[in-house]
Length: 118
Image (cartoon, rainbow, N blue to C red; front, side):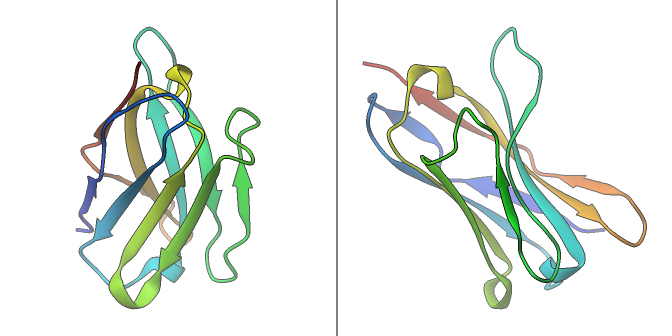
């Protein structure tokens, strides 16, 4: 089974920057659509950034567009979420999700906490 591990979360002040990473146990990133989700207290899980399989077309939620950047390094089995101009509203547990285009199965990491506070 594919396993994912997120890292890079922490405490940051408003306006600050943070980069999250997601490490996959297998070298097969091109076979998956990759999405970063976040879950804030009292709110539904929200997709914030997505990169498609193979060609890597990216999409962002309106709430993070222009501030967040998703990327992947296929050779290193890594997915990144670069975050800047962080707001308190960005506080959440962030998860990476890999969706298989073949089996339609979803694989999730354990999540990493991001707290934006002054």
